[in-house]
View (cartoon, rainbow, N blue to C red):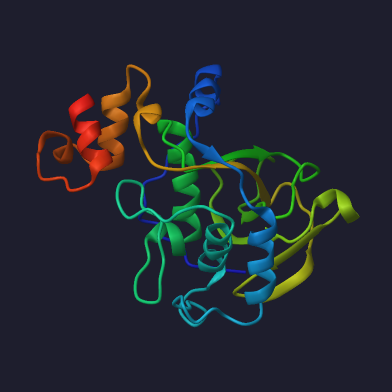
Length: 238
């Protein structure tokens, strides 16, 4: 079940979600994750690869590339700056194609308060819904997001429907197949919602400048060369 890993990516421990994080998320522009569309895509391309995207099936594994496509079909927009997440026929970010880099991306979203994908990590799968994701990880304590992942799949039905993990995935191509439950070697991720543009609501506390630097880079905040309207507005505000 090995998939592409980008082990040179910097990893970090996830911080506990505080009341401040929750209040800040509520203020953000969020939309519902379209689970039906994500699963519809997963089932359509589980066994027949989408030719609009590059396939890594013969070069390390396509599991993360496939799940990224599914999440994108569910409404998460691509992002080509800051914490990048994008894929295509010709190019992709490490976080789009690499299972460990995507997990680092989720940690960064939590740590720095600039979420694109709002998630919760569960110790057991009872609350997982279709469209949620499961990492295969090194054996350890259930619910620990710091374990190195080697594979990822997407649920194609709610766990409660049959009290089992029914998934779609690539590398070992699967469509509506059961994944063996093992809480010590799985990280269960529930997707809560999606956040869109990084605008004022994303920088609503005293750490806004540092957060902005992480998203855009320090140099862009001190230059007038930005072409994006919302980056220029952010520069003016900061």
